[in-house]
Image: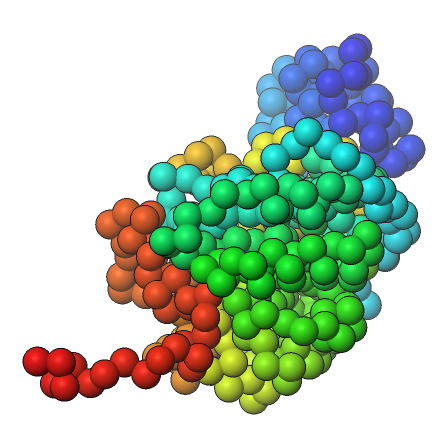
Length: 423
Ligand code: SF4
């Protein structure tokens, strides 16, 4: 039986030999072996009973013989996986074993790649903010189980050695505003000012007052940032998650408390901060845990210090799903009903997303008037269910974003004349 093209070679030794035993005794076809190996891999990664334990139990329940027996067992196996995926998963109280820390080296390299572009996930089929990106570094040292960056860049991170020249060569329209993020191909702050990275970005922001430059991070590495003069068109954003998700799925990143303390430090420097709840994960205590983060934010930040709050869910492209299974390790990130979105990416069913987003939005009610809230990569239907509003076009979204969170902080704008004085 051909095993390449299945996950069998990646399984733990005991599961491998059991899957081979099944292949021989039940005369599994190639497709059936693929199904069985994938199920074995999921059960291993989710730390559920192994395929062998489950199969032995199922064999006792199935009374039919011959070819029908194999079909019945495979059907039961599919149902078992579906049940585990549909329920809110629970993480072990002691947390999963931490994988070895990734040794990602930052190397400076001159490349022919463009540093400026449009968010790679932008789509006309979802309600999108039209974020522009600067890919100053490609690659990340963190080990988030759901992350696409590891799949693309692996164990190296590349810093554009001619970043200063590339940024100087960008032609931006001075007559319009831009929201530009630097955290789409790496973490914006984890590298500090290695290779002059921060200096180049801050200088770019200072030269382009019509740009809102977003530095997005899961680290607490704000020392280099806070020791510099900061143009007020820079905004520093933290991707937030519950301690449970951070401990089990965001390996190597700063704890929630460390992220919040770093955000406080940056806000104390007078820079605007922002928060991304992305990806929100559906698990047993999600309601309590995400609500608790909202309480901590309300207690520690004033709404005028916060530029925006975004929410998004687990959304995976198929190659990333394959890569997560190939990589293995203890993770429950794929233990979900993988439901296709408008692009065929795999995400939660709509109602789960509406519940997750509405919970955070409702929990941050005291900020609704002053802070801009949005959803990342979601459909018009979901927007309407969460906020009761949406945008006709993505350009409308982009304009509204920059109106609510302009490059120059609203408090720094000249106070508008009262309308009656202009009549
Ligand atoms: S909404 Fe999200 S996916 Fe769409 S452009 Fe903005 S950041 Fe990218």
